[in-house]
Image (cartoon, rainbow, N blue to C red; front, side, top):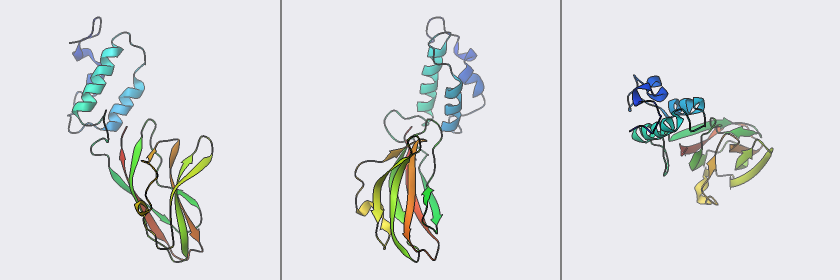
Amino acid sequence: MPLPFAPPPKESSLYQQLESTTLNTLTADQLDTIKGKTFSQGTEGNEDEYRRLLLLGLAADKISTSGPIPGTAKVVEISYDDNEYLNYFIPGEGEVWKVMAVWCFTATGFTSGVFALYDSVNNKRVYAGDWGSGGGDLEDSGFPTEIYFDKNTYPQFYAYGTLSSTSTTQMACIRVR
């Protein structure tokens, strides 16, 4: 039932934009795009649009109020061959991701490596874990806490040594917002 003075559901901007989209094909990115176009005032039916956006996102498993968003887990792999900071990936605006696992295959000449979070707003970096010359999974040392990242502060990898071959590092993550 619409709120007082709100337009009926058939006039909903949200429903009009998604009229030929099923819950199975709706994406979190589509909802983010619609959210970005919605004015943040509770007048002229917008409050009903907020409720519809939330309900539709929950019904399609594309918005979560309690944890990871289904269907968003991924493994990101980067190749490294020199002493430089490399980004695993930078999330889109409004997205928050959680690190699940990190692995490092060692290159010839690899002496150590670090997993860091880079704050691009303040140009600062914090180290969240490191590897010795054998590489392996970062969880052996244990993360100090759960690791979340967004567009402004995102994960990086740095390899130390005199590298004479290319290798890879992988990070498994899942979107939580």
